[in-house]
Amino acid sequence: MINNSAIFRKSAEFLGAICGGVLITLPAIPQALAQQSTPRVNPCPSIFYEEPHNSRVVVPQGCPPNALTQRLAAQGLLPVPATPSPEQARLGVGGEEPPVPPQPGAVPPAPVPPTQGQVPPVPSQPGATVPVEPPQTPNTTIALTNSRVDIKLVNDTAADVTYQVIGDTAPRLLRGKSSVTLQRIIVPLTVTFQRNDGGQLAVTPQTSSQPGTLEVTFNETPDAAQGRSTLRIEQNGSVFFN
Image (tube, rainbow, N blue to C red; front, side, top):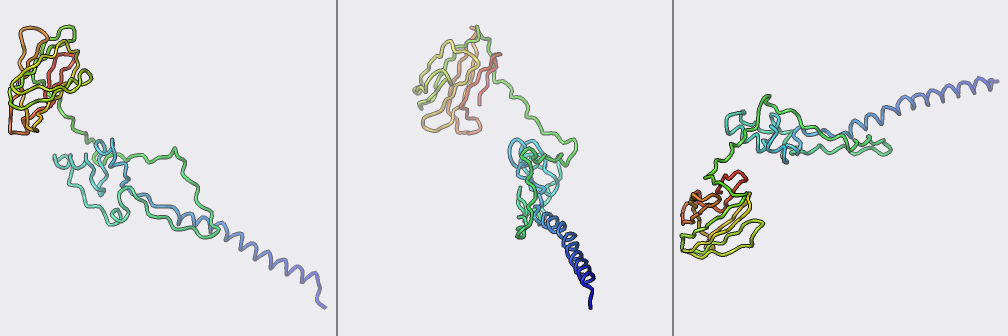
């Protein structure tokens, strides 16, 4: 006759072996699935192509060039940007490889806290600096009187000209072959002007021996590079045309 206690002991040992194998296997499943579901981040994130990084940060080698990288390469300060690798082209700028769908019952990876953003990498060219545009040279300067100025606009063309002192006057009309004087305008100031027929205006400034007086003459020009549409006077009396 078989001893019942021996049968019970063998059944317990068999059941314990099965449960032990299950307990050993289970922790590895979520870990493997979590690794498969973690996306691979693109080394060329879209932040490189957004301001202010687009004009201030040099992208790493192999990434599509942004505005700064193209400008420095054109000036000979950087090597010609390399063609993106097939892997980068497949992912796209700023993209990520789609994660592998988790298996039923798998534990999803913990979300990244909002405070943990991507940090832009250091530019690939150590010591590379962004070229600074030199300050514009004033077209002329005038002596101001109590931070005020009188501006005489002389329209020497046959076309009508619309002008406006920004923040001071509404748009006004200056007929062809006529003039107008804007008195006691507070500086700094900006005056815009344009020909109503769409043509270009060349401007000629002329200062007066009387402080705080500026005369500006409008003439026709077929050259768009010589065309001007803005007069700006700074607090120090510097006069600029753009």
